[in-house]
Length: 468
Image (cartoon, rainbow, N blue to C red; front, top):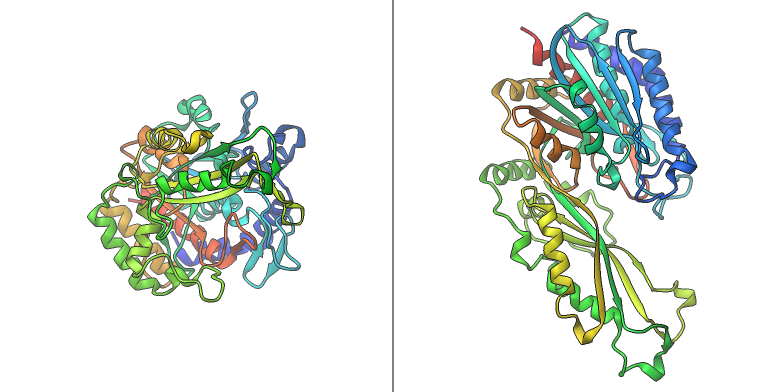
């Protein structure tokens, strides 16, 4: 592969074609089904898939199979099968569904309003993960353009990832024969420590989530009349969370939600901390005076990648501040998201959490925990020497710096699923979600130079995978 020629081809394709597609994609409010129960009636998901499908049909050769696969009642999947110069197969993965709007976008920006400022394309879903289908195809086209060695490439783009990929196992089973047995899996749905080199994700945390509900009354009553007699549902919910989390430190207190961190991952965390320095925490928009949750950069990285962490992501039963009268409320409900160590069973953790929260309810309150998500984490198999060398060489060639390795705190359920299905495959998990890119939050952006260079690195790895 002529690296300079490939980089030039990819840069041109991004500038002249892909950028415009992503602008239109950001405009589509195709929220993941967990956040839009009426996604079928709204039709936004179909619009996003149709946009990607149309572009693929315009740029891919006639020999490529391009299918939108639909199972009744399930989000669609875009499936591409692109012949290579060898029959050996590589599977490339991404998704098109998006997180909900979230408040806090700065003036002039919004989730469905694409805005290009310098190297940043703002809007929901561009970096997480709408760019993946375009980058995957661009990498393949860069090799085809110069008749360089390239494996057969299967591209699988789902529309349920942000909801835990509960539709995906059905499609993996349906398409198993067409997918075959890939020797390499490339996922472009992850993050990067900076925008200066290629980052490989070595692990992903699991996730369980659900609704904790505490009810004490059948209806609200005057707080002056009931205060001191009727227990507060909020106070009871707070006590229940203290069973799980040390509120003083944020540490998950229950041992069943922890695992021993592998020594290799500790070493990689040390290397990442050395490269990133204060950016480990400085990338987050702290309000003045707020400090990181732990001392030491390595500890912060391990907290983010190999240790459990709880967040309350939503609440019900609490009126808006301007409508909060002096009422002892009948019920408090909290949406919980518990990130899990990569090697911990999400199903078992969900059962453990339900038991922990529901047993012996304080003051006889009606307590229910209703699980909604349970996605296993993933710990990458060791890279072969050949793949490790290819990845590092690609990073040095297109970024001018060596590749680095670090776990990610998020969850990609597909990785655990594929790890079980293809235990002999190698995995390259990378992405463009770097400092301030803020996936899931306000002001999300895609760093365009990073996306182009990652695309070129993927082309190099695809070529090296089958080149003599």
